Amino acid sequence: SEARLDRYYDQRLGWGSCAKSSGDTMGRDLDKAGVQCADVTVPLDYADPRGRTITVAVSRLKATDTRHRIGSILLNNGGPGGTALESPPEFHAWMKKVGPRYDIVGFDPRFVGRSTPLDCGLPVGTNLFSAGHSRASFERQVALQKDLADKCRATNASVLPHVTTRNTARDLDVIRGALDEKKISYFGYSYGTYLGTVYSQMFPGRTDRMVLDGAIDPRKFGPRLLREAVGENEQALADWASWAAARNDSYGLGRTRAQVLATIDRVIRASARAPLTVGSAPDAFQLDDTQTPFLLLAGLDSDTDASRAALGEQVSVLNEAAAGQPTRLSPQFAGLLRFALTGEQSHHGSVQSAVICGDVAAPRDPEVYWRAIERSRAAYPRFGALANNIGPCAFWDRPREKPTRVKHDAKALIVSATGDTRTAHKGAVALHGLLPSSKLITLKGANRHAIYGLYENACVDNEVNQYLATGRLPADDRTCSKQAGLQPR
Image (cartoon, rainbow, N blue to C red; front, top):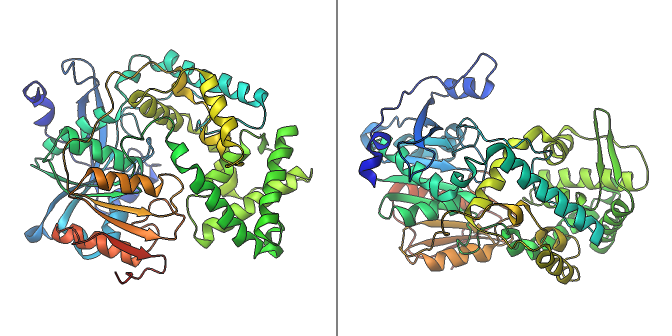
């Protein structure tokens, strides 16, 4: 089939400025950093290569140590729906001495960011809401999630079947061809680990060095992935509650872990009785019990003091609102609320839903979800009704292709924190088991999603950079501690 795709694989890329206009600050910053940008043309439907084409935006920071150049490394920041066009300069910094030896290539996957866009005109930027406390709140969710699917079908029916991970992997291989590389190296966070795994299976032998950080068990990827991490989120919230209890003077949420968790439960119950009003115009929001758990979830992706303080400030605001007091929002909190509860980031929610629903079918009967929600409440009082909630995939057209099965071994360095709240650590262990040649670096005791570079753990960063420099995986799986030192084995 590749012969029919020759014109895509052999295309000459027109590298040039990244700035699209004088007001394009990201593009100007990339230009300043020496990054160049181009558009790669790919078929919308690989089964019809003569049909409609779309573009995928790519950026490249070229190797400066050309005598010791290793090759191109492609970046994916997850999502699905995340951009990486802006990432080469920061990766270059994190890669330290090995950075100058790579062409560092960011790309916005099909329909994301600066690639051909997809926007269903949704009223929200995410579909990750809770079913709430009652059957009535669940029924409102069924209506909302069906509306999200209906809006996407009404606006983008012709492209939705092609917004999939397998097609993004095909695009990745076209990028490889257009870069004139026999093999590519690859770095993926979160959903990007799934994309990397799928690429390694569809195009075996075409990856050189592959790092998968915050890894997903490919057998579990799909609309109900968050169920895998529901316990991790309850645990991370409890850990955070201990942190907040030690700072009761700042947050006023309680002096013990139990008191802080009781405050949170009280806030969620209050939002179930009547929506909480937070902020003031123009940034005033009404929050009910389908929305308050999402805000907690959003604040649990990292356990740094800065992340924990941001969640402390947010829960304090919710607590004041539950007591009927007026509240002021930090710019960060207002931004999160705008993302979740307005159409400002509709394109993000659109692509995220389209990829997940286009990859794997979800149960269609609302009762399947309701039973799972009810069963989960006792063990997971804050997040069971969120992790098991119905989503737009219950109302989506069925995927065109079967999910990718892992049948080929691939060399990869897998990185995972034991307390990851998005892609549970057991998923990384499972992927390691599916890829016998892989090695696993475990960061112990961290409630953190996405580690390399971002978490500033010297142990993890050094292991990754060593592998990127030498192409040799560590002899054994390694354990790093939160204090950044390598644990004695």
